[in-house]
Amino acid sequence: MLTFEQKLAVFESFPELERRNVSLGRVNFHYENSLYDKKTVAYHLHPNGNGFVYAGLMDEYKTDAKGLVNIRDFSEDELRKLVEASIRSLSQRAPEEAAAPKKRKPAKEQRWHNNDGQTLLLKYEDELWYIYIGLNLEAAFETFEEAEEYLREEGFTPTA
Image (cartoon, rainbow, N blue to C red; front, side, top):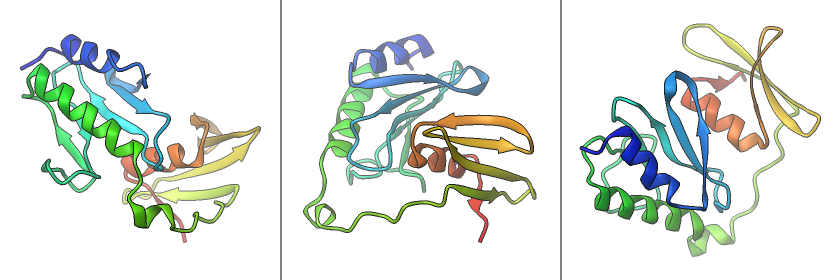
């Protein structure tokens, strides 16, 4: 099993990936040139060695419901191949998707809730998407898709 530092070194060797530190010492890596709403290639790399890579657009990997592959026990070669394949999959559109219509514009203010009864406010201001818990700022994102991905990963759904 690779150490956390060795896994970070593999991801950092891909100049097209952008490192983003998240909570509890975890790290995500984003591919900003993705042709899809999905931009996260590496999700929650943890100092304990656990972590995930997005493979939801590929058939050759067994993924969970979110399209993620657990990389805890991957060798360096296996991890490098998976990361390359993930980036490649996010760089190419299937022919039928290229002709699909674009999604409608999201509302500039939305409420999101989870199963614990918590409610968050997603609001577009000053060219950024902000997530608020009451009056407190939780996070800020450059795109709606990034904010939506974060909220869904945290277990929230839009309020109808």
